[in-house]
Length: 319
Ligand code: RP5
View: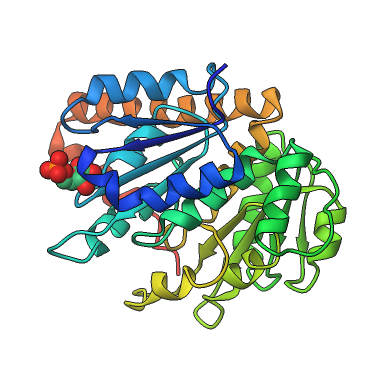
């Protein structure tokens, strides 16, 4: 049996920069395996280890990379184990390049990103996911984070916080139910005790333009894994992720990716429920089949006809 947490870096030059993550895991007594696996320089080796994670009993992977930072996303594309992306600071762009590359995942393959250089929050989040079925570790984390009292053991329930995001909420609940997570419900941001009591295993918090700090506020008051999902109209303000990553440790999603928030939550449930893992795999296979079908059609129809078909069927962009 492997350690419950894997920490992979794209280069050994990342290791000193994320050292605080190792210190947090060590202080909690959470066993981890550290690996250097480059998405570009050792793609096969990186992918092969990602495919082994689930069978090896790894519950969560932290993938740290800088610059083009493809390691977290490519890891996530090879496994249903939740991947926490840790954007490493860069000299040229202060890590903004790493962050945007990691967080803006396409629909269907989520990565839960932390902020630039947030090695400690990444480790807390990983420890919290690893601790979901380990009451002693959970108590240790709550004490270390100065969270009062004990929390009930989680069930397989996903809590959605922020009732205003009706459409995103519906999309997420529909997808969760398709993935076999039948218990999902909406709570007010103040209802943390209730959602913990209800048996939440993951909490999705919608963040609108005026509530970008809400996920961090929720995450500062619970040791359940919190997923922060920004929902915005039009171009995102430049400080969207500065505001999102203030407060407690959380897994940030790309802008307007409610389905990825649901998928990440389902992956967390899937660490305990084999049926959900199976459905996640089937969902991923359907996505792949769809791309293959499109590629075949493009090859058969030729570029001009394919483009004509696209312009007549492209749905209007989502507000
Ligand atoms: C990324 O490129 C690594 O994650 C690292 O942050 C960056 C630079 O790597 P080195 O050139 O230092 O190996 O893939």
